[in-house]
Length: 164
Image (cartoon, rainbow, N blue to C red; front, side, top):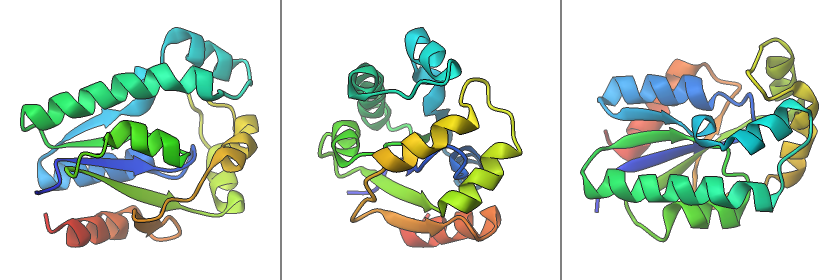
């Protein structure tokens, strides 16, 4: 079975959108920004500087999992940028579908912190980054991408690993 959905995962500021858009353009796939799927209550909670908890994330993850199922069923290869910080979240997203692959954008808190502090995000303040690292459960079985490398190299690595 071939991969139809790649979930680019990692903490805020790890490069999910940059690498995801670049990869999607390079291979002719659709790109979806997982943050756009958050319900308004989640957005407001983050905007106010309060981290999300599991109860906040489950409905969001369920909506994304349904979308992943639709993308697979309609043969719409898609790259999804989604933090997917815990193993349980990744299991919820993939629903054991072999067509879903995860790629982990891994970086140190210092590197990611420097990126987050130099950008403006609509509702994700830099003060929430420590909570994301605290929640993060590093994946096993995911494609590992070192964010210390340039995005073009990460895109090339992802293409080579997936054979697309």
